[in-house]
Length: 279
Figure 1 (spheres, rainbow, N blue to C red):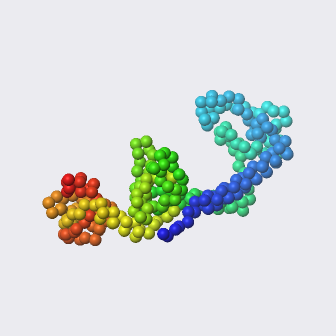
Figure 2 (cartoon, rainbow, N blue to C red; figure 1 turned 135 degrees about the vertical axis):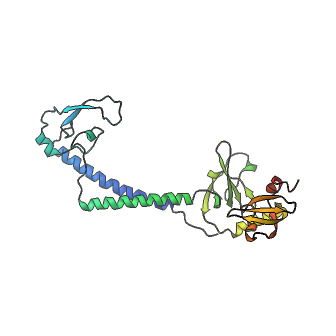
């Protein structure tokens, strides 16, 4: 089995480091501005803006209906506000007043660093999403039962079972189970939360061979004529004159037969019964 590495944890660790680095840059800017504001004796009533909210209907989350008036705090003047600058914490009302929105003052080098870090974070977020999708339990992956289930012991799937996910079944309550085929051809039904993907892109030779053996053992033998072919199905005609489409996923060996060929195939019993080929 060609085992691949699950890189989700590694990508998440890289993301956490980049986000922490970005948060530190922004925190440093905030703390520096706050220290400067406090050292200059900035007005805490108007937060260095020169106005205070006197009324708000509270019907709007944006604060667009509020009313305000000039700050009447003792010692708060245009000169003191120019010296202190703005308190580095914006609120919803600042958007509606000129020169009331605080923005950090940073060097060009720091701004470039922030831009590059932001871009790296976006790239890693995209990579993480793809990696999680790749390693999610789905049809066609090889999974291992790593968590035990509850319920009657004789119906539990043993921890350690490894198999190919043939299908994902969802019941009426939204619960999901895998139809898992191990390397001996035995079928298991673990819950999807019990298993982890160990190979998202397995070599199909072993599983195709098991599938072929299962069809030969449990299938219905029939001789057919290939009438038409599409990318996913084949129109066949049986010796009884019955015509119907057969999905290639159900009878893969039909892929090798050309239009007009006569083929001896093993059809899944449910498909044979559906088309009245057997009792």
